[in-house]
Length: 255
Ligand SMILES: [Zn+2]
Image (tube, rainbow, N blue to C red):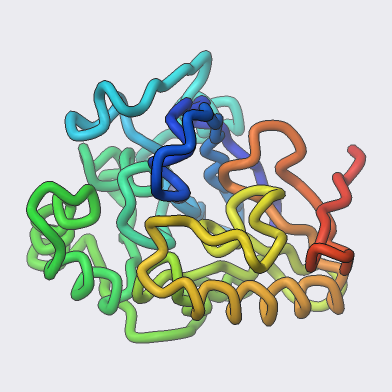
């Protein structure tokens, strides 16, 4: 398998939008989707913001981009039509854009956990997660979206695992096994500060589950010495985890 870490730009927002309350501090987040060449299959993990910032976020978020995910796919030598599988960790707007709004991979099946869709369906109409439910429903009806009911392999060697907290049905992805395994943690541990299990995002629907799952998953990654791809980390997005006083720390991979 060959793994490419893509880039969908950098968003800038008030820290209160991530952690809750009013923090009066600006934070930046990248969107590092992952493209995996696995034999004849081309698998995308998460799908950035899409062509532009969703309407509901204009004013609260800024999006700075030199490149987007589609450029990254082309630079890796592929076309959007070559993507066969898209795994969505959950339904937040910064993870589903190119997959659902609009649908940009005409030949791909999009995988999302049923529990994530069920939870989003109950949210307020203005919630970003709720707003993409109609696209998921349409995909299920037309056969290009598949709802998952728990852990499993999407293609041989690429395994999703449900790790809730940030949302119901939030899934992480193990890429490969044994000594060559890598881990896509999505919003269970999206950036270096989230390697501290006590860092809680205000938008987590179950903070205690997020904390417990983060400790379990990061412990396993440390044991396996599996590099982690940090979706929202602007610079050192590829790290190995080590135990530290604050829980875990990320040691950037050189290369
Ligand atoms: Zn996110």
